[in-house]
Image (tube, rainbow, N blue to C red; front, side, top):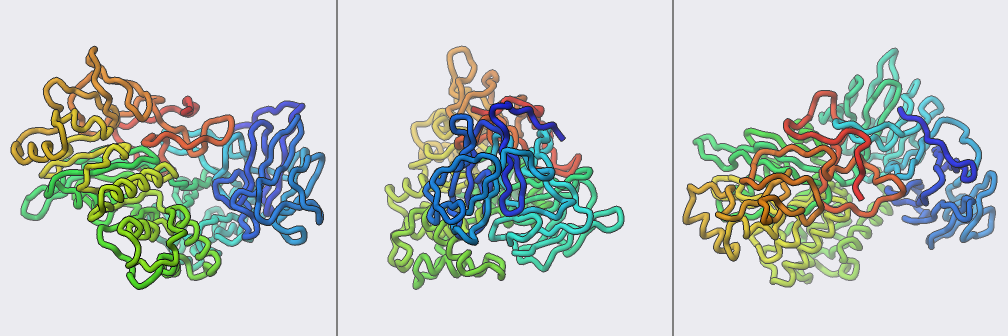
Length: 590
């Protein structure tokens, strides 16, 4: 636990209570209010806009300003656009009589609280019972643990978790049941009890009905994981910014035939990876191994430093797979198809309005709103592919796989679909595309090339791939694979020796060292052959220091393919040999 940093006497902190949860906002940055889970203050109520209002300093005084909400902001019965917060002020969001209250005061909060220290807290948490009131979430990150989103005191009796706003901890995701689970204290121990939830409660990756908890156990509920630490309950929210590490993946058939041969690579958050290779190179086998649907015989896959295979029962809900075949019912409109999918995938206690709202959000995200009432058999090939992607985005997966998404599309639609994949990655997902199309590989952030036998021939920026092989085009590269199957294609062509640093391939320069990678500068090494083992990360080298953004306010979208601190792990478990992360307090990214 850290201490709260001192604040200027001329700019006092602002104590805010929303839906029973108390928070203290240090002076300086602006703080957003709305239904968006990424808001600094989340108010999970239908009449509140996605981005409803903002709290900020104006000429030395705190003000609340409505940011164009649909249902407005009120003080008493009067609609307000901007109001100075002097002393204690109560406003209502969305309705003057029964809209959710937001109480603001420049005095001290009435009890221990969560402190938002110039960064968003990604949790929509209602007030727990008195003994479980939130405390300051200012603990530092370590090399093994991401900084918690929220820290609360452990309950003296019972703490209920779910989607409904009257829970002690609100996890506002449709994958979570309204009343999902309870954390109960029994004698001197704690126990997690599932309340017959739709998608289950997990302890260390395994689904449980009830289970005793010890310090360090990981409890998974929807996109949130919880961990007991001393007298605290730490919450970590999966916002989609996850890394993926393949480590020495090997798949061998019973007759001895090798389909994957020690495949290793690290992939940072918000990254679009393209996987290519000739027929028989093991692309489909690798896809099965990375998704966990067909695990490798040897090696491991780390989802944000958690073993995917060991925790698959829980983590599979955070993974989406779009198959090559069209899985839509051709006689249904896009909207109706998505609504049917929502009924099947979301908990039975999800209301029709909640499901329809999520459908409309996904249609808008993929630019399908104008085609929502069109039968799928009358959509273009690219539009049909977007609807297939929308089916997977319904549940907000952090890791999205696509198998041949551009198959059968003309060059224009091929590029449009790849640009859509890039946009999805930059919006906060890790996206992996297996493709035979090489026309638009430059849209990807990283490229993985497999050769027959399931070996890695290249991993790095796509613009350096052809130079690595010394060929003018990918057709010539694939012909060379067929003509010389015994060659070690991981060794660059003569005169071309790109340096590799945790999967980053830089352009060679005259002094034999690599120029900075286009995705961002980093520590460089002398030129050498491609290394297939997961390389070490230099201390402080392009690793995002925890879930929230850099100090000083909400972060802009980070550059893609950044490896950062992993999520919560059990002590001593899930560590990656050869991968070192920066010590806490390392310099955040710009």
